[in-house]
Image: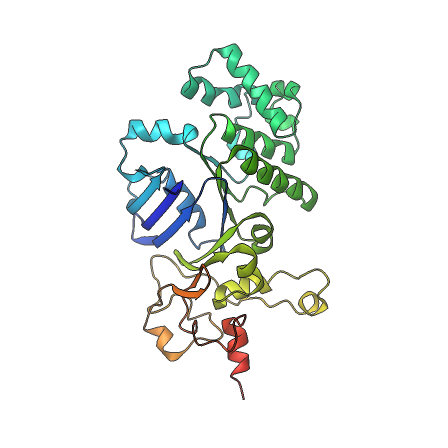
Length: 333
């Protein structure tokens, strides 16, 4: 049994905005799944839907199986018990997630007191142990959030996520606001904790390079759907969907002058989820769209061993490593 299995998940906000549309994902314990895409593609909505953290009035469909139990069918009392103890979230922007008037030790200890029925002294001691796990001295439990650097606050958030020994951690862009050196430290820390504690990790980011370096598998989202999924390094280096290929090409590669001097961007923005275009939602921005893409949506198709891509060109490539853009170039007279 998988640690997490998402089946045909849909999320529609009040007003009709379809933020997530039929997403299927699977994650095993001790593994790391990356979810990538531009802002507005549904990544954070997906993360919040996993633990029913979306605002009132939001319609959620499908199934979210955590250790075989459907989160979407749980009573509210059961959902509150599962949060922290079964699964936890590391939010983007630790300064906005931490209470500025409480010491960080008290904030880490709070879920331990609520979910583990520990004594106050025991919870404070555990808070110090958790800080040491994430590379901070236990004495920092008496610090206030403003007394810590950005990287230290992010470590505190990770310590809080680990407080009740959850089986699943969802990290929503945990390193976006950090410089590259601190970002690398946080990513290595997360990798070590996943391996040592056998938890499952979902890491959300717009940066394919970070996810390819950190995660085992990668799912690329566009307009609320997964448009490509596969082994993270393979998706990053040889994407099979034109959107995933454009995301990968947007980041210059060290040692590759061609990508540094001529990075390939992508014009336009993701569509409004309340007014999606007909056919494939990506076709208005797709540089290799066919006429049929404007009227026919594309399901995920097998694109290699344990790889899938929602593109009409998949299966018509000129070679096993050719992406849709490379295929189109290869077919150009």
